[in-house]
Every structure is written in C-alpha cells, then in structure tokens.
Length: 539
Image 1 (tube, one colour):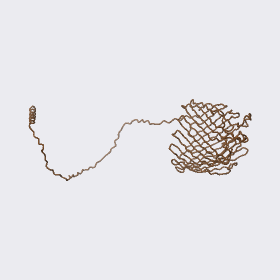
Image 2 (tube, one colour):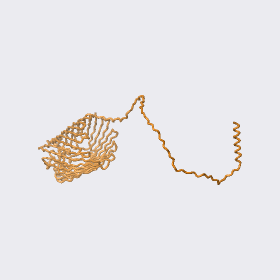
Image 3 (cartoon, helix red, strand yellow):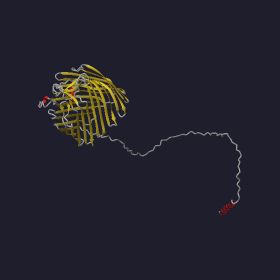
Image 4 (tube, helix red, strand yellow):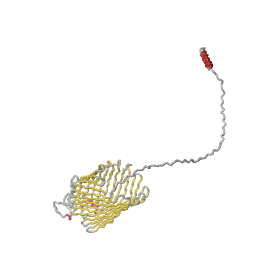
C-alpha cells in the first residue's frame, strides 16, 4: 500500500514538471474528413407473425357473507298544518240607543266531508226613530243543509223573514197624533230553495240547477207567489270550445183586489272560445213574457249576446267589451227591497233592456291592488222611478218611462291590501239618465260610492270603517206637484271589536257619525248617530 501511494505521488510530480515547458498553438489548422456515401433505399422490415392461442375465460360469482346491519332510516316528512278548530255554535247580542235590541245566532254541525247543516236567526229592532212613529224591526230565521259527493253537490234551505216599517213621512205638525196601525206596514217572506251542481272538474258536462218557491205578502192584503227555476248547462265540445245555455223560468201570481198572472221565460245559448290570452262568447238571448197588464203581452224578444276579453299582461290585467240585452224580471218584492215605503197597489212591469254596450278593464297590480273600471251604455223601455204618491204623499208610487230611458253608468272598484293586517278600498258608481215620457229621473242619484278600511291589531282588536256617499237627487210630490232636491248623504260608520279569547269578544258599532238626519227618500229622515254595543260567544 505504501509503495503504491509512493508511485502515484511521483507520477503527479512528473506531470507538474512537464507543464512548465513551451507549447505551440497553430490557429489555421483544418481537419478534413472524407466524403461519406448516402443511401436512399428504405430498409425493409419483415413483419413477424405472432402465434395466436385461444384464451378461455371463466367468471365466478363471489359471495360474501357479511353480518347484517340494523338499518334504521328516518324518513323526512312535512308536518301537516293543524286544521283550525270549528265551533258549532255562535251567539251575538247587544243593545243600542233608540231602544235597539239586537240578537243573532248560528248553529251548525262541525267539520264533515260529506254534509253540512245549520240554523240561523236574527233580530234587530228600534222602538224609536228620528221622529214619532218611525220605529222598525227585522226578524229572520233560516234552515240550511248541503250534501257533498264525488260527482255533485246538493243543497237546500228554508227561510222566513218579517220586516216592519211605518209610513211616517207625513207632516206631523198637521197630524200630531195618528193611529199607528193605519200607517204600519209588515212584509213577510217565506222561501224554499234547492240547488244541484256537479263538482267533477273533468266532466264533459257541467250543470247548475236552482229551483225554488217564494211567497211574499204585506198586511194590506197584497201577496205575491213565485215558482221559479234558474240554471245553466255547459258542454265541453273541444279543448278550447264550450257550449253553454242559461235558463230562467218563472211563474208568478200577484194578488190584491184582483189576480195578475205573470210568466217569464229566458233562454240564452252561446259558445265560449278560449285560447291563449283571448276569451270570446257569442250567442243570443230569447225572452218571453205574458203580463196581462203589460204592453209586452205574449211577446217574444230576441237579443244578441257578445263578449270578448283579452289578457293584456301576465299579471292578470284584462280588457273586455261586449253587447247584451234582455227583459229584466221585476217582482213586487224586488221593488220593496229597493224602497220599503211603496204604496201597496203600485204596478209591476218588467223593464226591457233593448241593448247594453259595455267595455272595461280589470286586474291586479303586484298582487296587492285589485281594480275594475267599466262603462255601460244602455237603453230601456219601462224603466221605473219613484215619486211620492198622488193619493198619499207619505207613500211612493212607481213611475214607468214607457218610451225609452238611456242610462250611462260608469263604475270604479279598487281594493288595496297593504299588509295582512290592513285592507282598504272603495267603489264609485256614476249614473246619467235621459228620460222621455217623464220629467226627471226621480229619486235616482247621480253618484253612489263607498270607501272602507279594515285594520287588525295583533289579532286582538279589529277596526272597520265605512263611509257611504250618495249625491243629491230630485224628488216629486205627485199630490202637490212640488219638486224638491234631496240633499247629498255622507254617512261614516265605525265598528270596533275586541277579542278576549278565540271564543269570546265584545264589540261597539257607531253609525251616522255625523249625526245628520238625512233623507234617502223624500220626507223620510233617518236616525242620527246610533250606537250599538254587545258581546259574541262561540261554543
């Protein structure tokens, strides 16, 4: 090992000495290589053939024996909303100034998917009024029931109503004392109604039939009885086409010193076409009447019927227009409901609406505002008005415009749901009449309106404000020939209800807050401010 290391060291020293010599570098030296031959022929590659050998495959099922695991899976579910509790009974009672007792009740079965039935009664009376002999009373009692099946619904009701008024529209300075029975009027109504309608929305045929009987009488030996049937039948011809027929039959008898038989028949077949945003109705209306005292005795009338509707926007805004007409069935009880101070022997005639042209727009804005704007232009014959009667000016007679009456009507409705607890709205109706055989549209105001506001304070206190407006109208006393202007009416009313619990509450209601004894009918002032308070209970 020592000898080897000594040799290596000596070789290194010799090389170091050699580096100390002289070197010559020749810069222009060139290295030349001989030219190589280039071959352009491609090499041939002989493919080799692989020896193929068939392969055999075998797939075997492998079964694993694993211990069973207890699979406890909790299925997510949505909890059903609990149905609100229904109460089978409701009683409401109160008392107010002008010696005004009030009582009302409802009795019904509780929730049942097959049927419902109930009983309703109401009493409201006032012994006193704005002047002497101006007391009123109203009593109502009704029994109702309804049966539900998979294909149809059957309902029926029986009702009785008794309304008492006095003819107090006379000059009490001239007649300070009078026998009250001579001015007392009592109206009684007995009614029986039934209804049959299908509830299968997939049925090709839809129907609604409502037969009924009504007996109406006063205490001056005048009575009216009517047997009627109204309804419709609709057939689905195609997906976008329906055919419908409306039907109204009526047979009535009006009795006082004589008997008047009155028949009314109306049939209205028309087609209904709906596609995309368009809805169209087209058909005609056939009417027949045979009033023995009417100028339309045994007459048949034909009226065209057209209705078109177009959906302007997807937020349910519609424009509609149309043409309609027909005989308007008029009954003694209809006129009494409009003016309870009618004399007992006024004539009853069916007004003939020769045509009604109408157009309007309806819809909603941002799901909070619902509105309707509509205008009608109609022409009638035998349109009626009210005037103080010639024999007794404290009672009213019906005056018929035998030639023609043009009526222009404009209507505006709007409802605004501010939030769930606040709701307000209003309705305005404007009327303009052009009469031909009478002087003025007696007792017909040009403007009738109402605004309302509802407020629910924490589901505990409920406020309800209504303000009614009726513009001035012209009245006429046929006995004296005197014409009068009936002043306008502004009638604010407020009701407040406080709920102590779900079953018990108290209320107070104030009507005619301006305390004005205005006249809706000439010579008939109404009560000033009247307040009614009471309680209600559910059980």
